[in-house]
Image 1 (tube, rainbow, N blue to C red):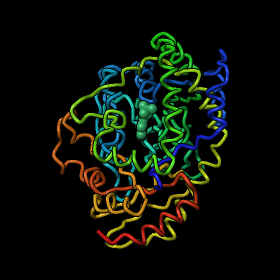
Image 2 (tube, rainbow, N blue to C red):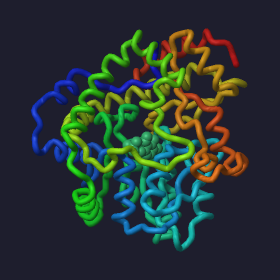
Image 3 (cartoon, rainbow, N blue to C red):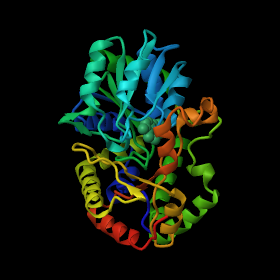
Amino acid sequence: MIPRLKPTLGWAELKAAFSPPGKDDVRLFEEAFAKLMGQKYALAFPYGRTGMILLFEALGFQDKEIICPAYTCVVVPHAIVLSGNRPVFVDCAAGEFNMDLDQVESVINENTGAIIATSLFGYPVNLDKLDEIKKKHPHVQIIQDCAHSFAAEWKGRPVQKEGIAAVFGLNISKILTSIFGGMITTDDEAMFLKLKNLRNSRLKAPSWKKSGKRLLYLLAVYPSFWGPVYGLINRLERSGFLNRFVKYYDETKIEMPEDYLEGLCNIEARVGLTNIKKYKQIITNRRVAASHYFDFILENSDFILPLKVKGATYSHFVVQVKNKNHWLLSTIGFGLQLGWLIEYCIPEMEAYGAANPGEYPIASKYALKTINLPVWGGVKEARKVTSLLDNVSMG
Ligand SMILES: Cc1ncc(COP(=O)(O)O)c(C=O)c1O
């Protein structure tokens, strides 16, 4: 079975996880991460969303409107709401996955605190438009959401550097991983110091229990991605049996994980520090896999290909199909698992007021019509994927 995602974890990460803890593990991870992203500072958090909540607080936001995509990971508006602010949703731009920045302009007012500029699926946010917005509305902060994109580039400019701070997620589905975890990077010294103080006062030190759980989780990840085991996991996942472990949201609730205020463990920091050494290779794999798909998947009545964008890091290669379930189910029989990331339009969720499906038409369409192809294994796996897809009849 070719899995929809696979973390790039090897012996080095396992060895790092079992090596003796050092008191500087987290700091070393932060320094290496900041260097990788070309930024002055990085601060580690147990989740990217925890970093976001404390970042809003560090910016002094309370009862502010924060503009974010209708089509993004639902934990982003959760962080906005749980920090005492209000999300203002904006649909995707026509033909793109990223938020429509023209619509963003039209919802800015004097109570707007920030724009969450998300480079979804690794597609760089349009920094030229963002510059214009910033010039016209200097009171609005730009926060880059790089959880999917890491160092994607818009016309040669790395997106993470263009704003007050950037947010990264580091769970095992992300481009880089520290088992769980998140990072905030910034070039602003005052913001760094404020956020660091807040983090140190708000987060409790990770318990032994948490470290033990993270170690067990890591140990379970290795065999899980071995073909026959993965096939079984896939069957259990489809039956809903694993929802308790893999479903990260409830349509009706705005909530955080129980341990979201417990700091990043040393084990996670050591795994992350080891994993980031593979960054170049990981990004190259994704780009060559995407390039193979662009060359070998025919755009037709059933497959609409995504945009080809220079500077994209392709955390996911997302296509639109007419009949998503047909593709998800029929490829399994051929040993290929396709992904179904972001299968919701957030404002349509019960927790966010169940907006009418016509209000965010593009996000609504993507929620129903997108699947993603594996990009983790470079051109070798991508070739297998395209030859397997040839066997599947159109939906
Ligand atoms: C686009 C986006 N932003 C932010 C996050 C938050 O990251 P975390 O899961 O570490 O809280 C995610 C997580 O999956 C995400 O996909």
